Amino acid sequence: MCDRFVKPGNQEHGWNDPPQFSYGLQKDSGGPKRNVLNKRVHAPQFTGSGSEMPSAAVAMPTPPRGMNPPPMDSSTPPSVCPKTPSDGQMEAELDTEPSFEDVQEPLYGALNACRHTVKKQICDDVERRLKLFEDMWKSGKLSPLVKRRMHRLSQDLKRKNWDAADEIHRGLMVDHVAEVSQWMVGVKRLIAEARSLNPEQNTCTDPGS
Image (cartoon, rainbow, N blue to C red; front, side, top):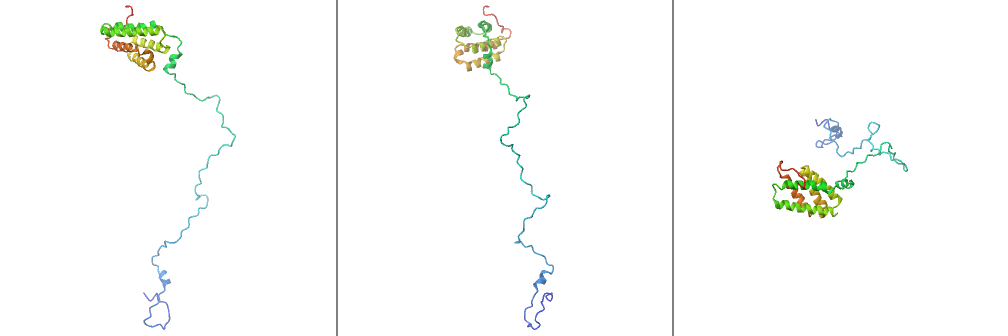
């Protein structure tokens, strides 16, 4: 095999001279080729419409200066959420002021119903508070809002709507404590005692009966 790679050289070389190999024949002998790792590779060039890189997103055109957006249709005005009036606003809109007799009758009717089972001391204290409420009403020391709320409370008490009456009582203690603090304790006790009565005992009577 070494004879294939020996160059034809000087026939007069010595017998002990090393043979001369042809390295070109070794490269063409069909051996495995090695990949050159330090070879520079150029970036691919995209040509043609099919291989072009996607362009950046096109910005939406802005309207020229001086132009306003198109006006809204006059036939369809923008909807506006209606404002819900508060409890105080609803009461302020009422022009009529309730009479004291309409408030007094259910309160004293519940008190007379409680006298059959509730202690006399408790009933007398409730009656004293109701008298103080009457004096402040007639002397003009109560605001119209307090009068209207007390009218609603008395009507709920007459219809045995205990929860509604107690809710009005708590609202008055929070919103108008300076006006009602002296006598509202009696109204609160009256609601609690009237609620605890038996159905046959819970019948409102007139204050004079």
